[in-house]
Length: 269
Image 1 (tube, helix red, strand yellow):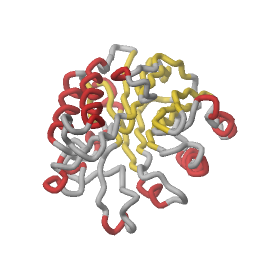
Image 2 (image 1 turned 60 degrees about the vertical axis):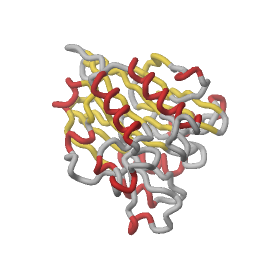
Image 3 (image 1 turned 45 degrees about the horizontal axis):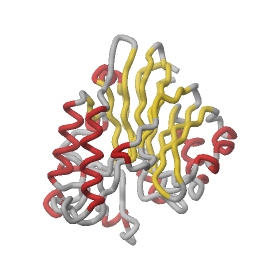
Image 4 (image 1 turned 135 degrees about the vertical axis):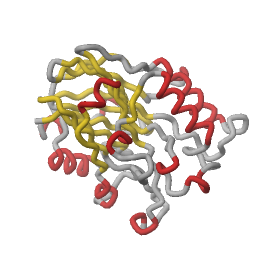
């Protein structure tokens, strides 16, 4: 079986555990990275994941806000929980997994949303977001003969023109402003990451992973954004066989406003 990895901003893992279980039973990824779990470590629903075959569970949470978790059907080892911008927020965790003779370092990120005003002088949340992305320059895509790196998560930035429903109308909206998109792309390129989602889905095609709760009929309006990302070191790009955005999940019972993204690789597990 090919190795598969999914990323999903779940917007409260305990509240949405029924659809997490539905997703895992249906798609059976080897690894699932969750963001915005909104739960302190002592209350994380570890046993619920164990019950459906995901015996390896790591998390970095806090009460009511933020938080990331990585669950897997194979052994994973915790590498780091980095405190970005010295804010004390639980927005990053890295783990390591051994697959098909490769040691893969996996970064799970939840980048700050940045508030509504795209002016760092007026909006401390936006300043925090820009500083966070700048600090991400420490996250290089390390790779070697038997090593590789993957970076996934809700990066809260839609970098390309077709990552939003209207490039022109979104240029002054937080998540698609030039200072954000250029900053994220500069970091990605400087650190050697490949945008794996756009490897199989050309940049001239619309691609979304998030639709606002404010839209009563999100399917018809289809005013989405690609806020969730899958990046990899260059040596994984030839091994990528498929990217699947599970759009239907946006219509499940009590959904997140984000949907899962699955990446599959020609690595036997």
